[in-house]
Length: 357
Image (cartoon, rainbow, N blue to C red; front, side, top):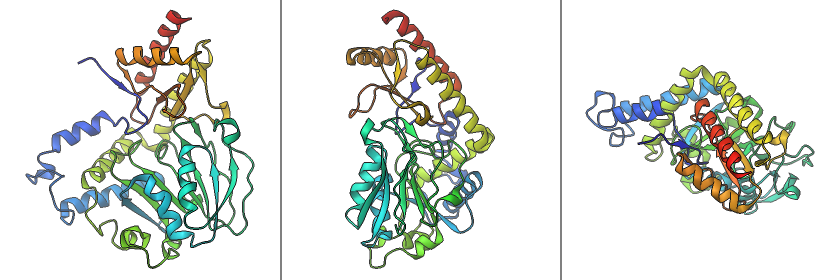
């Protein structure tokens, strides 16, 4: 079979080495004679997996000791509601509106309290990250989305919210670069971009937020439950957590986040350079807000967009169609997309441009 290059926004590409190791161990995990998918989540074999995954996450991100690392279910979409359900208690929070995923989080928060839109880039169809903010002094928290996969914009740095806790949906760029976890009170991320398969959600939450969570919530919707039980109150998504452990091993083997970030910077630089130097392609995000994970661009017409996506697919470049809500094209270049894959895409883009000028 001819090589395929996976540029889907999510579920997204995983490292080949990770999938090969999972394949090799699928029927006999840790010489148990059983698959990871059929061993007890209370067994010592799985305990080693989940504690190992947490330890690697803490080491790679530099997670302080006063934070819980949780493996939950329901995706980032459940966190949109779970956060205000636990923390808002009818009070007010500040949200920064940068696109579709921020919009969904805002909608859920309004069910549990007041929402102040501290900043928005809706005026330009979410093609930039705001720089001015109208924060509320007594807000319970400030919420942002670190990378918007649809608009292709990403926070280059994060705002100073003073004593107000900063919360972030990092589903699509966590582990793509170094961050200071201590600047955030809560980070959450659906796994299906950079850290594993769909089905598990990583939540990194400071102890004081767990303690401040509302009482009398449904058991499975309380952070207190999962922090107390170390993500094992119910049967967790065992296979997905196992893959996260393998991905953390892979990131470590690359040289850690500094090395991964350097490669991601170079991939993005080359791809945006190819777009900017062409008369056929045009980037949709403002230069200073461009995402290094989701590169969005357009051709002169919707017809050419469709032709580009169709011919790219025939050539082995999969998942380049833009989100249905905005159209255009999008190349998602997460950690597992190597530099050679991006270079091959650029070659195809140059060839297509020559034939369609």
